Amino acid sequence: MSDQSSHNPKTASEIASHVEEPSQAELHTHRRNAFAGLGWARDNLFSNIPNTILTVLSVALLVWAAPPLLDWMLLKATFLNEDPAACREAGGACWSFVTVKHRFILFGLYPYDEHWRPLLAMALFIAALAISCDSRFWNMRIVYVWGLVLPVCGILMWGGWLGLTFVPNDKWGGLPLTLILATLGIVLAFPLAVLLALGRRSDMPAIRAICVGYIETVRGVPLVSVLFMASIMFPLFLPEGLTIDKLLRAQLGIMLFTAAYLAEAVRGGLQALPKGQYEAADALGLGYWQKTRLIILPQALRLVIPPIVNQFISCFKDTSLVIIIGLYDLLTTAKTALADPSWRAFYVESYVFAAFIYFLFCYFMSRYSQYLERRLNAGLRR
Amino acid sequence: MSDPVIELDHVNKWFGAFHVLKDVSMRVGKGEKVVVCGPSGSGKSTVIRCINRLEEHQKGRILVDGIELTGDVRQIERIRKDVGMVFQSFNLFPHLTVLENLTLAPNWVKNAPMKEATETAMYYLERVRIPEQAQKYPGQLSGGQQQRVAIARALCMKPKVMLFDEPTSALDPEMIKEVLDVMVELAHEGMTMVCVTHEMGFARTVADQMIFMAEGQIVETAPPAEFFAAPKTERARQFLGQILGH
Image (cartoon, rainbow over all chains, first blue to last red; front, side, top):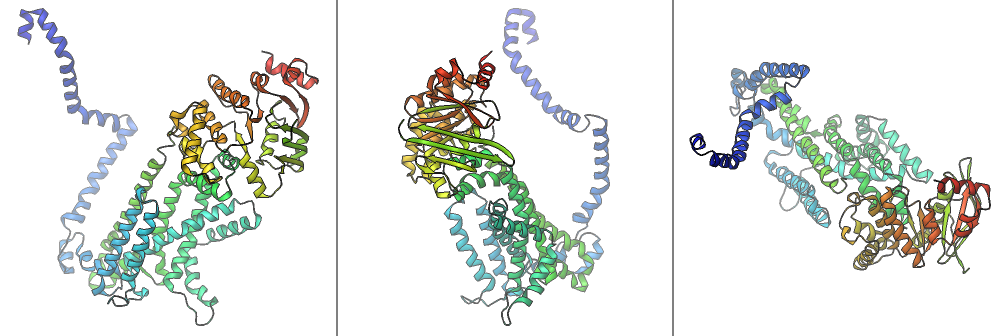
């Protein structure tokens, strides 16, 4: 090209003018590719002195902590060798503990040969939950899905029908128990919470007083004591001979407890709505329930997705408190699995495994709430 | 005057100890246009908010189309079906499209089939000259467009009376005209209207009666020509001087 330009300046400039732009751009992208990492690092990691200090400290922390952690978790870990002695020898994490005990941790005291039943029930249950997250099913279809899944799960878990042996629900445990307590707790608490929140803002003094009284009482008491009352005190008030299942009592306790907290989150949304929305609905002649269902709740609930999901996550984890009334939820089975003397040393592995399962569900809920917020507010963005 | 559509008879209202409305009486006949004006805090918005019971009055009688407003919820809902209201801040439902805003009340309150409600909605959207915005959300429209949708939303209920509560006060100046044009058109078609507004040009064009309020009382009632040319009271003279005198 330079050769050409010396001979024929005109053509050269012509060529240059044609070529200049793409070649410059090309060069630019090329340079950007080469220096992208560097530029990014300068902008994000070393933009000023405090940032640089933080970067250096973080790197130091990584260098200090990562190799031993990696060593323990993977390199020196034992995965499949079912002999505890091999674990002690290797010195790393003993994931064999999980390999050996995972069925007990996941399903608790449920008869060993029947584990496929809670497994299948759980798979159906989680599939139904996943379907419920898809807005295309937010109509009658969701009712059909659950109308089918819940009875099937019930039959699988209890049995006593279709040739399945009967398993009383005090033998249930592990992940299915946690899932049932949390999901039903949340799903049943939610409508109650909405009613409580609406009642707390009602014009009718009696309704308002009942709702305020309920919310404040329940919020003033720890979940542990609610569960204790449900399991120990409540039966004392029942007439002789009448008993209510322990699992059901725990379920109701969790539901009633969660509802009080959720109600306050929902009330926040109701109060955040401009008064004009209520007035416009009134002025159009909508009745109270029409106004609430069509105008108020769709907007108010969107506003409070973050605190609502916060409460869901908290409820999911709080189900582990049922240990105090002798139910074998996921955390309790993880702990109980350690009772085996030969594996007693590996409590960290057991709790890490349980924590990992809790994390999976909670992280999903958190991500889903962010997705839901973006999706539902798409139309409202101005 | 034919039978009044709206009749207020010595209406009194208090906010706590504050006496906002003092013996307010007025009659609005069928097809009549009344413009209520007055300084801020004079109770003019409160008066029209009492007419569809967004505010409750404590003494006196309010009759709409012969039905008295009492605490009876069914009476209130019946009256609200016949009384359209347009607010200063539009108050469209932001989670619904323009079309859904318009069809919601006819569909749920009057049980109109969706097809019919949609036809009515599109008819009124044409009337307020924004049929092309039907599928958008209110947040995507300008203030003037939102207020026109709000007017269309009220009209979809086929009301006997339209109440306007400072409909142009929240608008940028260049959008006021498009809203007033729609209101003038509506007036010419014979709609019964009660407007709280500071748009004196609009009042001069359409009003049959001017009502001037101050400190919760009706100070002066007169046809606009008379009211603007020769206000009878010092208060009204002062007020007009302030809003027209620049």
